[in-house]
Length: 261
Length: 174
Image (cartoon, rainbow over the protein chains, first blue to last red):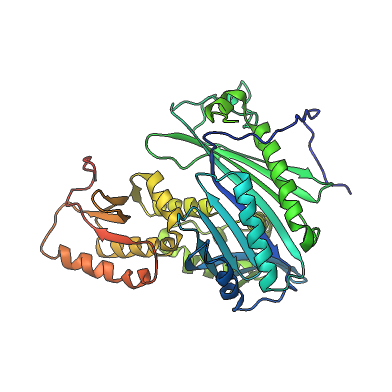
């Protein structure tokens, strides 16, 4: 049976020209490579990796990360809660970091977003170095995620003025909302990839009203991207994320970001 | 490693909740969970797992847990930015709060970022505010701090348990 999809309107996909904003709302950009389970992993790998990146990422820290895994077995679904060591390597300004854990490489860029060109270079470099220090058999999943925090000076915000993606509230419902969250998943590349878009009220400080627009683009099934195509996928994913971001916002919000180019 | 299967889920879920949530007064799902609900929960966990790992998200989840522990957050944006720079200290925050609440059950707790205006030094502070400060206060503060200070060894970030000698609810800036 084909997977159900809900279609809203005929798509009007515009051309996106890689806009650069003076004040981009990105608070975090993340690129994550999860390696296949048949990829050999041992405890020497983080050390070998660090040796090659320490010039740019000198500050090394260790964290114990809790992960929940759900495995389908003949006896039913199995939840496995496990802890794994993760090495975090920070750039001198601590705004860029690499995370390396068992069969996992994550590249995080924190605000101020350093531009795609710069972030891409870091992704490419980290991915190539990882391939030099270990044999990667396959890719379980790749993800590219952008988390945007959009702050408004006013305590009352009319979402439709700023966004083209927001919860629809019919006229017979109260028009004041104190909290909301809306998620949609858009299929791409013949269902090989999904883009999960989420908009919600942010955890706020006392003085600001803020919205989080979270765009997570990832491969749905394991081993659909060859290791050698990893970086090409990342470049394509970035284009899709950019299209989706531009599709989520209105010109009024765009003007708030003060387009630079 | 802890394993919970759907076939023995309710017993194990109960044990898991008692161990991890018991002290925090959270409702136990196992009290009312059917197998169907358990399956839905499994789907939710699967979806959560299928997210690209974000540090911002982890920190906001941690801050929500701090708020759950009835700790007031001052300068939330600054606290978040500090944790983004020093995420290793996240592992210690809840232990510090637990220690403060154990030794000062009657206290109001406020978390803030301390910034030294003269030298470039900043760190998280957890202020204890009491109605009355007696002679045992400083010793109790030291005992509470001792419960988590060893966890800060080799960490880049810092959490300091202290007081501003104000009373709970006092509005003055910390």
